Length: 168
Image (cartoon, rainbow, N blue to C red; front, side, top):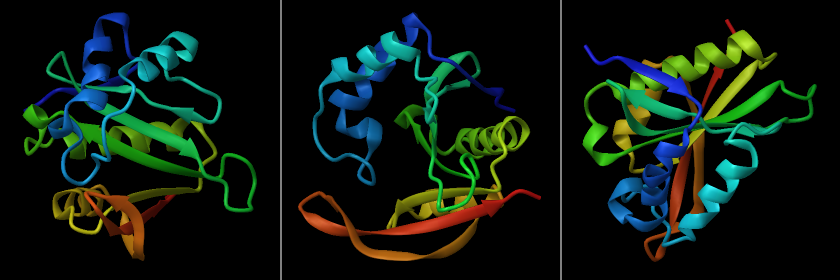
């Protein structure tokens, strides 16, 4: 069984962050939207360690190796501040398909319901990312709908599927 934890990024993890900006395979066909400045993530880490007031991005660690990045961002929809968060997860290719994503989603959900007043968590995924859709459903999220042609990637407009989970 894989041991998965979420923790703040450390200085020794910065080369992993660089991969998100410089290696298309790291984000994969469903997230890669072009090369970006690899120093941007390092600057953000130096600023607040990815632990901001409105958004947070902890490292996903599997068996003592950084396997990816989770994220949560306040996405208030007219209710009280902190009532809704948009979450996301990106795993390095070598950590996909082993249950790491499901474990990380469950940890992130448990964390947000334990330390915030979030009532609603939502996640968006590419309409063709069937693996992520199945993972979200296994983590307890429910498919709410499809946003047609909302994201530009790989030379065309792409659908996004929205999932939500409410505080039990």
